Length: 344
Image 1 (cartoon, helix red, strand yellow):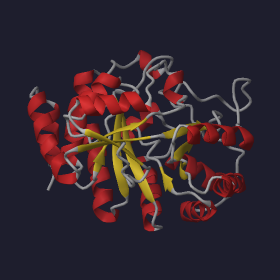
Image 2 (spheres, helix red, strand yellow):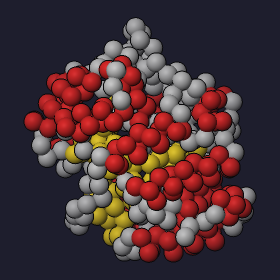
Image 3 (cartoon, helix red, strand yellow):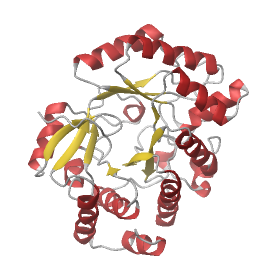
Image 4 (tube, rainbow, N blue to C red):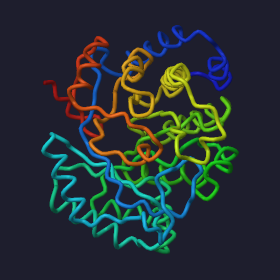
């Protein structure tokens, strides 16, 4: 049994960072191969930046009709996948804004086209808010929407759109986006249809520790019931160029490592915890491998959302393998579902 909510709160208020890291590593060693740390080669493809939600933490979206808005052509998406395959990639993370004019048929056509052209590529696509938007625009239930996307070639669903799963915070930072219950319902529905998803948390957006614990408790409860989450990925809010960034203090590396360690202990029913390099940076990501993480994520051949918020961190396969080795682990490439370890 993992931490209680009160124990997690006490840890958030504790200064014993090293002790938390050691305790998290004990959980990590029981969940995954203690010798190995994994990474992935895939590509983020943001097919549109048009969005109707106007979240205060986002510098990426553009309102419908904006001259800076775009919707990628299928041919452009094909070209991006071709480039990813040349680098040894195995999957794509396809996400965009909430476009009010794209119905289910658009997404079915896109997925079918991708599966026909690239049958070997894992399609990890469309966050819970996107699926909710597709359902609403198309006049379908969430279950009908996911069922049709699955039939068209969708392989798994990313955990985006979670931010903090506490409606007190969501009302402040993303009041138009799906509620915590709606996010949960979409992931539970996907799990009930046999589809795996990931879980995420974006912290440092003005929430209190109790809100983070509420978020973790919701994820643990879902996992207890469905077992459908492959991994949990926490990251820090990137404040630059965003309206919210002017109002909240920036999260620190210590806060990141503490949150990572507590997440590993609390989510003892989720196998994999990812240490992120995108917002904390590559060095903090490496240290995260001693705070309970067993994975360093993807090389992210392309990333546009936090780039728009001023984050300029970049990496490659060689650097990820080096930081894993320097942290004392054997690097292994994985696929989106954490299968097919490939030692090199």
